[in-house]
Image (cartoon, rainbow over all chains, first blue to last red; front, side):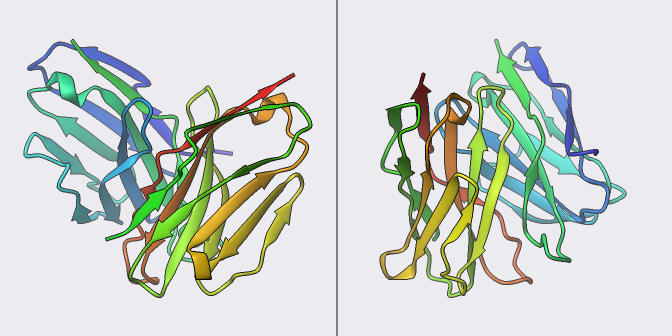
Length: 116
Length: 117
């Protein structure tokens, strides 16, 4: 059973550096979502893709953030010039727009980012 | 704008007690979905249930049950005969719109459940 996978699981970086995270969704899922979760809070929506098209971006997604899903399969989330406020867990989820499990989002284990 | 409120930040119970988690939501859409997720100490969010706005039937799955009441905009979750393995943070979430919508999730702040042996 291949669920949603994310790499790396942990990333420690210095302020000002760029980081990139990868998400591999469940293979038959056409939607892919990115969320951010800070300590003690619920996840917050960042952006989502349907196939390769990025259809919505949150106001939380500043100019330093960019996400891609070039072939409609895996996705990358890049943060440029990281700031300490970017420290959080970055969660990826995928879902299908078809079938009985429509709109059930399944989450990966997350990438925990620490910016020093 | 959609909003989810989980007023209880932490609940502590002794094993075998029942525990009910409250969830109140706000939305202007007539079509929406409600969810519960479990986040154990390992950190991965585990999907528990999805309900759509047109189905108010309560649901039971093993020791879990859910009470959906549109009149009070609530979707409460009960764990019967709690076990230590139920210790986790539980999130209620809402997504608006029908199949054409993006269905992004808006989460509540979560309720931490601690089950003591």
